[in-house]
Length: 541
Image (cartoon, rainbow, N blue to C red):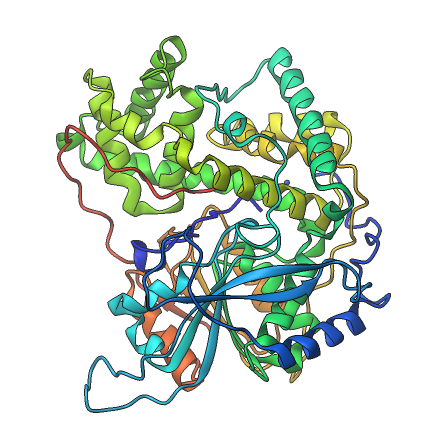
């Protein structure tokens, strides 16, 4: 699922980020449900419970303050062979503070560990414990150890790589919304080469990067932390393998929060979900243009959404002819504005940069959109894990003509993101490993404790129908909707109503009787164009 790999808790601090194939395929060796995998999880969890986690100094990257400690948890590469090759997951922790932010004399009892996953696939959660320093999270941080980790393949957890990082972030690049046949064939060739490179670099390990194994790893992590039952917050893609966990291990669940849920329907994993996502990005792109048009006095991009689009297309044409700073072409422009479709707090900086560029000052746009060479390794790693997990998880059309037909049709009404989404996922058409049959996510009445689902109504990266489907499939779940808003992930963000439901659930186990809704958080205020712009938080897109 094309999602933010870097996920902002409270909108400021934390790193977080598909129509022809039927639901089918065959389980990959050692990755299917059963066939020894279930007993392998039980054995690995028992070993982890005995060993625990020895927390100490964190690795140098990312830089974490002294209050955050790190350790490792050992998991089998292949759960069907639990005594075979082992890999280590890097885990971070900030202990519960016990401090009530509203009453300094009250010592808050510890409720256990809260484990977080930011999504992706390919997102690192190591910085999550820093959320405890934010006002929106202090009550939760008082009661819980905040636990982040790098899932298998990510960062410092047996990292996966498919190509040279500097080649991956090579710029400038094009991003045609209606590509020529020659361009399509060029991208097909690149997708085939990328799939082959993943197989060559990873060797026999490649098939073991799956959502099912991420769910199994989560149970081993639970046991290593000494938790009899899991308290978990998953965002975006993290909601999918969180739902797999709930299906596989319902008796191991204490509380689960699904923030910005992806659609878990097996028939949607993942080709159809990405088609739906491309369509939803067009609506969110319109939201941004309507906002910029309302603030035309500030940005001078046009007083209607159509006029703002013409300003954007003017910039695309200029960048195609002469990339800004030799680094920012149409591809980098599109990526920067895709970030605005994830989070509306990016709207002012994007409008500022576009306005300045059209007036002759490229510096703000270069600062926003140029590749960060220092982050190339992290960026390439995140993409490699994303590709491996999604390609392994389910069936994909293997004939490019299917992709071409579906997305040519879609691009007529949703040109903003459609083809860029295709190129990101196209290696799955030529993937060398056998595909799994997606698990039917579902729990019956009484099998699972009540769970909380949070969703913004206009989320593009995880369209709202995914929240409705998750709600239908997880018996006893309660859905809280932020109306008329589109941030990708709303837990601990700007909306006090949403945060009230989150705290009531995590701290008291209390949920609304039925589905609830919250008014939208305020739109961002415009700010006057400046001479320079701040580097954006990295977003998968």
